[in-house]
Structure formats: C-alpha cells, structure tokens
Length: 275
Ligand code: ZN
Image 1 (cartoon, rainbow, N blue to C red):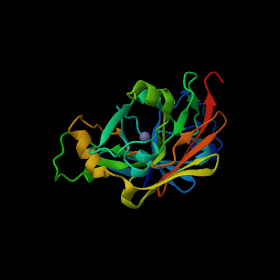
Image 2: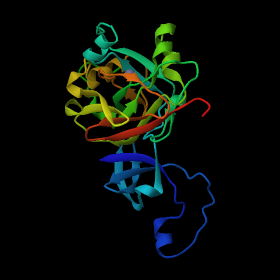
Image 3: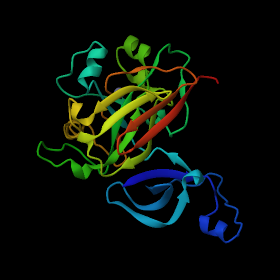
C-alpha cells in the first residue's frame, strides 16, 4: 500500500464541486492529510504509523493535491558508507560497524520543491537512498527481536551533501545539514521487500547511481537494532540506509530524481541561493 501525506490544492471537497455547490474554504492552508495512492487518485487514509491504514471516504485526483514528505520525523538518522562501491569511490574503507549521523528536520523539503545550493559551498552532491519510516517507539531492541513491527514503510530520500564542507569540517553536521538538503517522499510503500529493491538516481534524466538492497553492508534489521542501542526511535522517524556508488555534483537548473523500485520517484529541481 502506498501512503502519502498531502495537502489538497483544490479547497472544496470533490462532492460539493460535482453538485455545483460553491463553498469557500476558511483555511488558506489546509491541514495535511494522509492518503492511499491508488493509480491516479488519492483516497483519504485513516490510521497512523503504528496501527496501519484503512481507506476513508474522500478522494482526490493527483492534480488536486500537493505531496508532502510522508512523515514529520523527530530526526533523520543516516547510515554512511553502507555500500562497498560508494565507500571505495570516496577513498574510504568499509566501516566495521554501522556509521551513523543525523540530518536536522529543518533540512526536509517536499517532492518538487527546490534544493538550494548554499553560496558557501563549491560542491553539492546528490545521494539517492532507500529510507525507512519507523512505525512505533523503539529502544534497545535485542539481537533476536523482530524488527518488522517497527517498520511503517519505505520511501525515497536524497541525502544532499555539501561535499567540500563535509571534508573540510571533518564531521558532517554542516555539510549534511543545510535547509533543503533532505527531500524525501513522495509516498511510503508499506509492503516493500527491501532486499530485492533497487535505488537509482537520475541527473537530468541520465542514470548516475544504481544499487540493490542486497548490496547494503548492514541490513535494515541490523541498522535499526544498532540505532536503537543509542537513541529512541519514534513513529515517523526516518532512517536513510546509505547511498550506492556514483555520487556527483549538481548545478543550478539540474533536476535530480531518486527512484526506489516498487515505491516511487522523488523529483527535485536545484537552484542557487538567492535565486
Ligand atoms: Zn548518504
């Protein structure tokens, strides 16, 4: 099931428009809703990350909605160097244990919103990744605990990185943390078999990255158990599982697409600061 979070851009309910009724909406910014994407329509979804989702009554067509990131995480936990080929292209050995870092929630943008290249960076890279959305509160899972009940679903994420600042700082908060550096969405697939999934990144339509879930050095299960030894994961939290080889720079005017098979395409244009 593909779950999205969205805002209707047509403010009247579809039924009232069909009956010719005009009903001004008092809210200029409607409250985000959750939906189930079914082909070209979105049906209201009732539920939450922990209990799951069931269809509601209202539906919208895709032009009537704006996709938002599918969750509002308290944190985005990322795994560095989780694909051997990417570790070696950056001149690094593979880590003996998962290497984790954080992106701030202020870096989140929606699908189609622009990634803004900061003026103080000379090199901003895309990093296409498979991301996990957490279903329920999770802390200190045991080695034999089943991780599946803690996974709400999977989505596409672009771990945008100011590569020059990441290198010069020696730690990654600034290089990974700029506003707009964490697009994710547009949907969360609840049923994905992540081991057989692929993640591909396209820059202006040209394929630049391609990786498979089976190539991850640390599997999603291992990563979730590992992170849960450190911090409490909360419903809606996002874990980015690392990027395969082929990272590279973006320029103003570029369009980056991250495609996770069986999930969706996450598309964002790139602009420069001040434009
Ligand atoms: Zn990354």
